[in-house]
Length: 163
Image 1 (cartoon, rainbow, N blue to C red):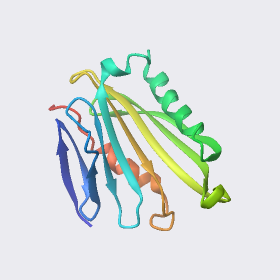
Image 2: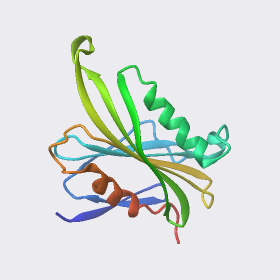
Image 3: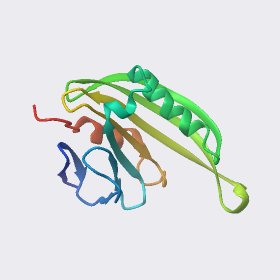
Image 4: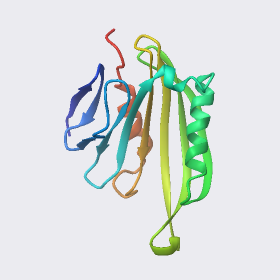
């Protein structure tokens, strides 16, 4: 399968050519998100916003931890475990990668439980005064042996400003 370039509001990344794209209709240059969806419904999202909007977080770690806390306290979350936290570079910026395993209540009355593998990366682009969050949402674990390398392929190609 070949990849193709997706670009919007100054950032770009490579996506598989058979994945669909859904832009949040409320998205703007200042703030928004876009979802990339595989054939079986697995997704990778890119969210962005002004660093000014993220000023309640004094550090990149606080930004990441705030996002992880939101996932953990979701009303449908039965269990939550952080599998991995590491640091990397994206487009020359320090970036924090997280891997979380959750069990989500599904179905009527929340009687069924589904495991979810979630990857995320947070970074701040001071060149454009923006924050970026990339995260994956695994819906069909049979599509990929491991969602980690799929997510990593998106993150490695992320460019947030002209170099």
